[in-house]
Length: 174
Image 1: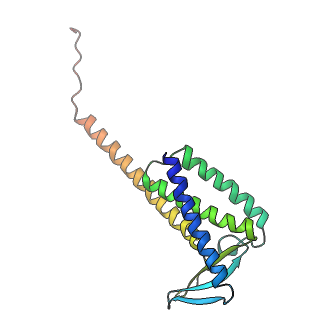
Image 2 (image 1 turned 30 degrees about the vertical axis):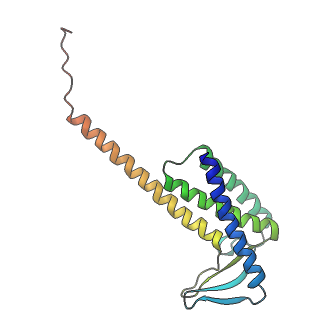
Image 3 (image 1 turned 90 degrees about the horizontal axis):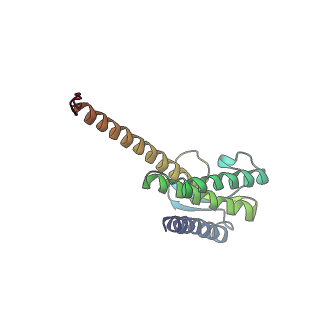
C-alpha cells in the first residue's frame, strides 16, 4: 500500500512538472522571456540538450540510457530497500519524480525545457524537475544524517544502560 502511495505522489509531481513545461512551451516559447518576480526570478524559455548546466550537450542517447539506468536503480532502492525515515523516503521520491520529469522531455523532445531564470546572480536556467532533484537530495541527506545521529544516540544510551547495570553474581551454588 505504501508503494502505491509513493508512486501516486511521484506521478503527481511528474504531472505538475509536465503541465508547467507544457504551459511554458505554449505561452513563453513565442515570446522568449517574461517577468515573474522582478529582480529575483524571471521566466525564460530554454531548450537544454545537455545535463545540468548543459554539460554533455547533444549527447541525448547517452543521457537517456544513463538516466534510465540511474532511475531504475533509484526506484529499486526506494521500493525494495526501504529508506529508514520518512524524510529519506520524501527525498528519494522527489529525486525520482524530477529525474522522470526531465527524462520524459529528453525522450519526447530531444531536450529538456527549462524556464526559471534567477536574476540576482549568474545561474543556469532550470525547471521544476531540477528543483525536485536538488531539494530531494538535500532532504535525503538531512534525513540520512538525522537517522545516523539517532542511531548513535540510541547506541550511546544502550551503552550507558549496560554500564549502569550490575553484573550478575555467579556462584557455584546455583
